[in-house]
Length: 182
Image (cartoon, rainbow, N blue to C red; front, side):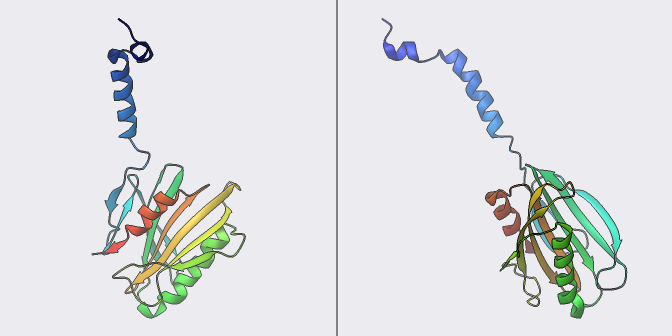
């Protein structure tokens, strides 16, 4: 005898493959977090994809300095960490302030950015570690949200940044809370 329950329920042979496919999709996230360590530093952090590496010479704080970067794109966002050794710990505060200003200018940040402290054991106490949130434009002129942490350890200066048309709070939390010095 066929009941209403049996008629409404699809046969197991049809639901099992559908359920298996749904489980596989759930196991392949857009953000595949992995720990990375920028070369020559004690910093460790999580990136949601395999990073590309790059270096360029920039005038940070005056003389030309090698800026090393790790970055990748995942889940509609760009994630990156950049580090430079400016050779003098006494110069890190003005260099980080200049770096922050240039980043905000490059993204054509509209309103005043939100700046808040960020806990990062092992980072230099001065200047304090800051997390900067701003809205602006990407290189293509489209709206972009940016979040960036600025900090130092000794004479090394760091920028850890995330850009996206719309930043997912859980991705930003995972990214920035993963920062640690070992």
